[in-house]
Length: 360
Image 1 (cartoon, rainbow, N blue to C red):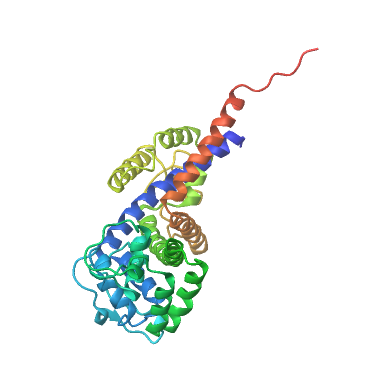
Image 2 (cartoon, rainbow, N blue to C red; image 1 turned 30 degrees about the vertical axis):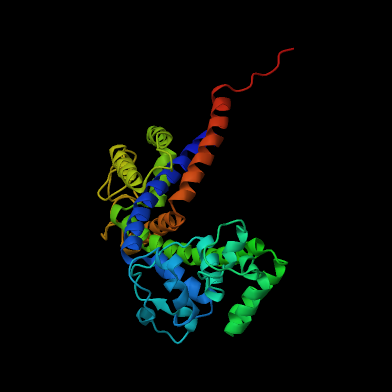
């Protein structure tokens, strides 16, 4: 095949993967919103960050802090934690109403206030960022500009060794600057949340793979059959490329993505894309033929048991390829489609207007 035809086949494959990925992503979002697994991941990440695996110490005080408790309804209940011999596998049995996102500024301010709380007569460390603030009540000069030394002493007095080993270097690195110390704590939190995001991505990838395989088997989205038909049917290939060019941008809402995916899959059926069952290709109208990968493999004396098993094996491989591709996620295929479209736009003019040879 020519380079342009190869790009068109790639665009067709990517377009199919994108449409199915959008459906799987939408279903996964519905499951996540129902089970509130993001909140479960965040709660576990904070307990591990604060080394409070049972949720009865610093983590409990953190979630009870007004800055944090204002982010969710209800109360934090350590009794709802699912027990496990491995302390790092203790998780909330359900998401409850815990927040699925806590800003790094909120985390730093709440944690600093837990060790050195503010009152009507003393300022917290957050107040040092605005020394010109008007104060009410009797405040001594030493309290109006709190230093990191008092915060450091409060951490040592708390006697929480794991938290001490984490916070003391962050405080010492600030060199007496309260704002810098707060920024260091925020970075510490953000780095830990990157790990929590990794948990979520790996879990979603597994869920989408299983969910995608079920959907792929139901609609018979066999990558081998799709590639075979795109490579051998130019009208189908051109129609798929045209549909891919009209794909809405990825910045649309989740609901719009679902409708766009459904419309795209409906258009694939109308274009006789090898999806679904009992489909006959124009190149191979015989459903018993071995090259029609989209037909249901049949056990008959004409083909033999070994031939039917080989057809089912190829179909299973095609499903697995599609499922693995879908597990990469819709954003990946959106970006890939845009990149391949850009490459095609640079190759297509050369295919239409080849360079003319020089004349003597």
